[in-house]
Amino acid sequence: MMRYSRDMRGYGEKTPDPQWPGGAKIAVQIVMNYEEGGENSIEHGDAASEAFLSEIIGAQPWPGQRHWNMESIYDYGARAGFWRLHRMLKDLPITVYGVATALERAPEQVAAMQEAGWEIATHGLKWIDYRDVPREVEARHIAEAIRLHEAVTGERPHGFYQGRTSMNTVALGCEEGGFAYLADTIADDLPYWHVHEGKPQLMVPYTMDANDMRFSSGQGFGTGVEFFDYLRDSFDLLYAEGQAGAPKMMSIGLHCRLAGRPGRAMAIQRFLDHARAHEGVWFASRLDIARHWAKVHPFRPQELQPSRMERDDFVTRFGGIYEHSPWIAERVWDGEMGAVHDSAAGLAARMAQVFRSASDQERLDVLIAHPDLAGKLAQAKRLTADSTAEQASAGLDSLTDQERADFTRLNDDYTAKHGFPFIIAVRDHDKAGIHDAMRRRVANDTRTERSEAEKQVMRIAELRLKEAMK
Image 1 (cartoon, helix red, strand yellow):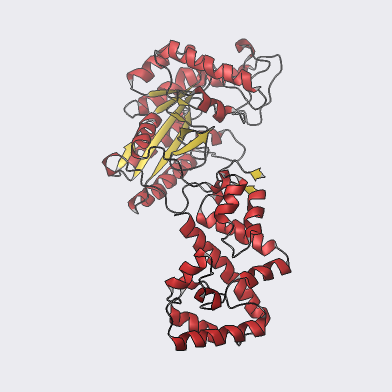
Image 2: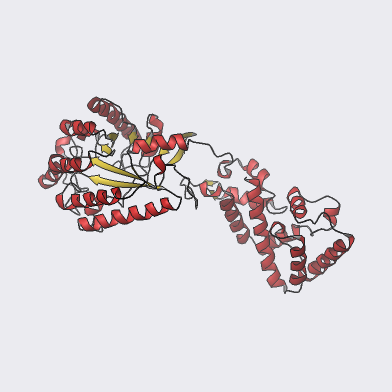
């Protein structure tokens, strides 16, 4: 079997109402990344200088050497950029992603964060790339980051954002067990519950688009005007969605050495003025959002998850979706399955894919397996439970003698001409509509009817799955 770990379904077309406090139309969440003093540096015990998120686009690490320009760019963030952003944001409930070793080297900045009432989440022990770091080493770093964070701030962090992640980061955050939320995801505009080894963990998604990091990339923001335009447009669309009944969360990512520069900081001030000019805007820390979400939308396990079922159980439950053709359910289970198949629509789509991919004879056998409408099997009460309920829904279980004779004649004529019984998604029609369709379709050529019958078989399966997964 193949089980796909990524959830490409999410909330789907209709997102849950977050019920933001005060009926807010949007939650605006600003993050200040405090990394200065935690970046790669020979003086920090690293093998090479930093090369990421700076004014030097395309910078490369200098193995065994200090990089004066790089270090002084980071120094600017601590010495000047932080205080500029602090003056702008000190009256708002923002979140700081604090690298533990950077916070340790910033006692005055930490004191200012705490005086402003900002949430300080952990941004890991060091601002390094964990891509190739062994799992056990990253786990030790997370534990040490929490210990050092608490020693520096007086409180353990409630949120965790590693940033330069490995494939182990989220799992390790879940396993640590003490975080109200993890932020190493960019997968949504709303918080969501992630399940790791049977235990739920709240995820509060971050952003890499409404983020000043794009000033340090080859394709990104060139001026503060571009940054402001992007923030404003993001806000306006999300605010409009909120007015339309689907409020969201807007994340903004800032770095002291980037947005703290004067020409960029003006973009932040203009955005704040724009957002404050609207009613129904909730400025919140990530912890505020996490606690609100956990209260309003607590974790509720999905009762039926086909992708997690054992094979025998899956085939028993879904083997009859295609009439007397359990091989379709078997092939579905044996193939790739994931969260997208845990909805009726997703599972119906995968079953239809398997059906379409089957041989011509296999598909014909599925058609032949269908009973005549209001035929002898129905009279003898030998239909499957699904077929019985479907035919009853259109009144085909209570025909007059004349109606039964007419249906029998049409069934016989149709089967004699096309080689398979007349098939229609009964739940989409009433008795009169079914009768009209039979009279009309019996005259079609067999190629046309084969195509239509297969479409109806897939529609019947879709309707059955909707009932089965209610």
